[in-house]
Length: 319
Image: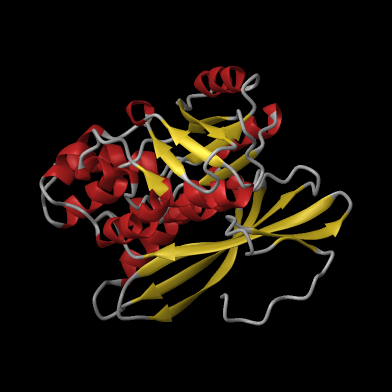
């Protein structure tokens, strides 16, 4: 998009794509703004209903990452009718609809095209008060950094494609990916946080770098405190490393200071592309413990994985 003409300054545009934020926000009036996003991808699990749930949760997550409330959504579908019966599409859409219903979001229509490869997701519209927007650019030195879901889904779903993981593992990881970031986002609004983003295709380090750069800050992470799915350590070790992981690792490397003790497999995991990942949250140190406690009381595990510094701007140090 950098090759497109720059958009003229417009007071209605509160958040555009300049800071690589999770969604765009357009002001309607002094009390209301719209949060808009779209996301879709090819299947990462075999079960069509669960695929629909995961894809919907992933799409809704961008609204939650801005502190917004999803309102309505449109189905976006590419369907190879020569490869799958129509019942498969019905199951995918049912999964998406049930997840949207859980989010109190109305699916009001959509668009389907014939495609050589199956794709599904949602275009989501949400609402937010213009003065309560949470962007990825507000992290401040001294902030605690929290993460609300474990990483490692990319390597596990790659192992699934290769027939290298058990069904029980896939079921457990699928439920994590299908879990909404709704409760975590609502608590962040209640407590008040400085910055937030969701962890998806660029991996933990890719999205953290975007936040650090947008905030003109540096991040320090404690590797031992980063939640990692235990099976991901095994699948990475046996070579189930997505192409996206390697691309992410190459992209982030110039701005990452890895501890000398970290193996290449551990570096892979920090760059593992996530589907419907958790929220990375920058919160003032005096509010952090209270937010962590509230998260736990609402079924969300949100450990502190690091802190924000004013040293080494736009860099991340892994301790």
